[in-house]
Amino acid sequence: VSNPSEERKARQLSFLRTAGLGDSDIQAVVPVLAKFKSQYAYLIERYNRSVVIAKARGATPDVATFLRKREELVQSTRNALGTVLSTNGMTSFHAHVQREKTRMKVVAKEGQ
Amino acid sequence: MKTSRLHPVWLIGVFVLASLGSALGQGCFNWMIPKYSTYATHSTDGTRIYTSVLVDGTTGGSCSQSGGCDHCNQIMTPTPVHTPRAYNKLGSTGGWSIGAAHSWNEYITEENDQNIVATHGVNYTFNASTNVLCSVAGCFSCITNPIVTLRIADTDYIFNGTSLDTCEYLLYCPNGNTAATCGGGHDRTLYTGLRGILRMSELSSHSRPGGKWSMPLCRERRLCKHSDQLQLEDV
Image (tube, rainbow over the protein chains, first blue to last red):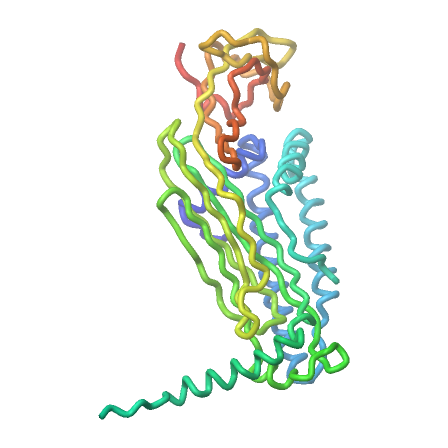
């Protein structure tokens, strides 16, 4: 996301406006989301490397640790959003996430 | 006379399929625990409609004789791979996107984004599906969402006065229907001095055949937002 295309910028702006954020909140939230995305990608890459290593050793990969770190990343991102967003912006963003959950489906429980 | 020959690749394929068939018959894939999430969403900026479809997750479990599978060596050699796929069709734009294949227990993710320039008031279908294709077990974690119909709806609000630092708008109903109420106040920001009729371009959607649009002709109270100035229509 360090150099997103114009289409991606417009897309992100559209979704953030739909989330009820004003201009100043949008400016504040974009770097937080970019950081989340890069850290999430790094977590996945690191976990997948650990799967390869575990396979070579005949061991089981540690998915529980990966899921815990992912949860920590989500929580720290929420904390960062709470710091940079206005009170109204955070309320709108939270309400938007709750609404969007109806569009998310989980095939099986994590950590099952 | 032409002699019929069986291609060696076909023979190998039949052998592998026969082996897997017996493995499958004994529930040899039950030990795979899918842990995938999917997300399909849409948005608009008043000119374009944007849609995103995402699948993300991994598979847990381990193949073992004690787990009820006597064919783990056959199944795990070579290591099964999982490929994430996301289908995003917006109107006539888009289709399947296929992510990189990874070892069955690696974490995989695939996102398919589409957008179109939309004519206001015209309906567009949004069709979203995701699945993970397992090289030995076939379609895994397959989800097809109901087809959603989207359109950009223009809705007029009329200025209804101010209260302290906020201005208030009512849905401006050309048909005079003001008896019904819906929603209630939305977001609130500082008073920006807006007057007259405010035109909002918002995305309406429904996913049931014959279902009603979410933007009804009814009375709705709306407080102005700074960003709404972009949609301001001259009186």
